[in-house]
Length: 85
Image (cartoon, rainbow, N blue to C red; front, side):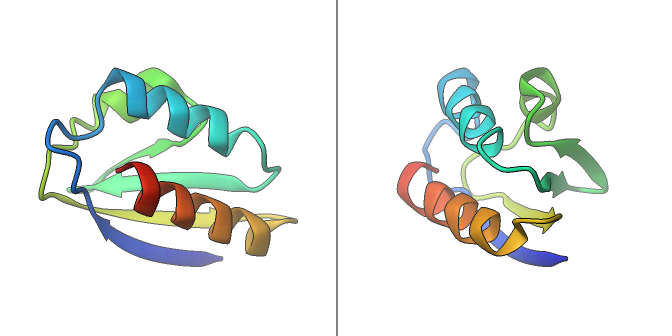
């Protein structure tokens, strides 16, 4: 399992559009990608669960990746967060 912490820089946080893009990106990988914030976690492939975390600008999330292609998934998701969130 690989993990990284990320502080959201998008001024409106993880709202509908970036959450949708995140779900689309996460579905490219077979690994399970989980986003956690304040003790709550959501699978990155579930749009409503991701939006339900209510992540705002400046808040930190922990992203964990576990599975057969976790190296590729880790790099891909980390790059996605840095480029879009």
